Image (cartoon, rainbow, N blue to C red; front, top):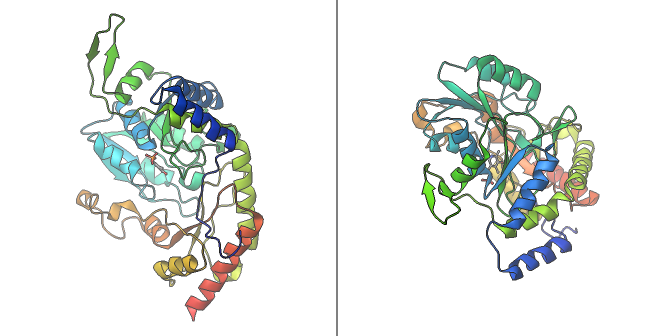
Length: 374
Ligand SMILES: *Cc1c(COP(=O)(O)O)cnc(C)c1O
């Protein structure tokens, strides 16, 4: 893309075949949950080593239903990270439990598992690790802690579809694993999600929690024995997902190439904080740099936009949001999350980018930072 074309920080890649398949669904007369959702669930299950999978209309709904299936509710504590999309913590409130936040490890920018273990109390019921930017939390250590303290795990793998831990795909192992297929995620259905269920979870209950708690009988009657949500995926969305799944390995590989190019091209003299260079596990959902602390982030974003480059922020530390302050959190509670949350910016990274787009971003970052320092 030339300098005069706006380069967004992300953009989905949808092929013509997918567009044709979506058109066919639109003509079929069946738009809501139907055969395409079943096919999508089967395809995601196969991708995740044959585990049980149910599709949802968001990665927030998957998290909430996972907590309900894990029996998390009033009086329970759930440990998670302050450096995530706020959905991760909101679902804990949604089920009536108490979020217990712990600081991040500044290198991986994921939850510090030592601090998570230290935060376990007799009330702790579950832990929600988040694979920020698609960099997986250490699964070996995570499940060691979960087993030792008898905690349920709901993996917020919203950003890590296509990533792996020590050669095993995220989703192919573990307790509950929650994926999001929001438009910005590595695999998208527009909006959507999928929940991988552990052996002890009841898929029929999962389906009732997904749709109004309804249980149907052969004679046309029905019963409702649990309060379910309205979380079902449409066949339109599932069809997009089926088309995306064919490309996920190639998408991930391209993201890795682009991330490598960023790491070799960005000028070291600018004093930026760089992401962990883990190419075996991470899926490079985002490429995030930390600006030098004296740099005004708002001005940086505006200057980049002036150069036709979109820059995102993922995320300010959530314990300082108004909704979370009543839990007693204050500035300084989680210094690493606050520091990263204040300095982070997400540079453009998506599979359809060409190498020269990366070069253009790197030179714009250098120019903007040099002029701002004066
Ligand atoms: C996107 C995301 C979610 C929520 O997914 P939606 O599909 O937008 O509801 C949850 N957690 C994290 C870390 C995310 O990035």
